[in-house]
Amino acid sequence: MFDQTHEEGNHSSSGENEPNELLRNQTEIQQRIAAQEIRKLKAKNEKHHTIWFGLGMFGLIGWSVAIPAVLGAIVGVWIDTRWPTQYSWSLMLLIGGLALGCFNAWKWLHKEGKIDK
Image 1 (cartoon, one colour):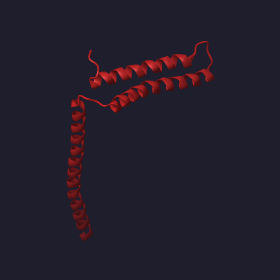
Image 2 (cartoon, rainbow, N blue to C red):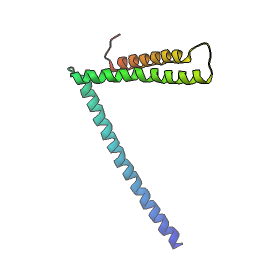
Image 3 (spheres, rainbow, N blue to C red):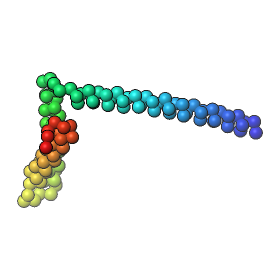
Image 4 (cartoon, rainbow, N blue to C red):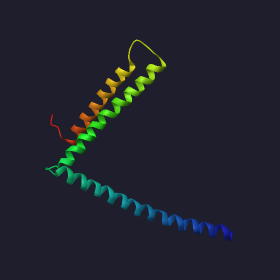
């Protein structure tokens, strides 16, 4: 009987520490999110951008178009080697990946507000 009450006492005391730990972790997370939001707002309000910003944006958009196109071509070649047909899956999926990549880049640019409708 003594062991049970002793164990219950230990269990309840560790349970009391858990909410404090969770609250502390929650405030840390909230602080991190607030800091990220401040950085994003500061970057958005900054009107002059350096050449490095332009090159970084160019690279980001380039990769967002190139990766789906290359993946489409690779999957197309795999399909063409497995099941040959009169239609080129490589070409169709390359064009599909290119279209998907261009759509993703366009959507991202509009989301960032860099292009007006």
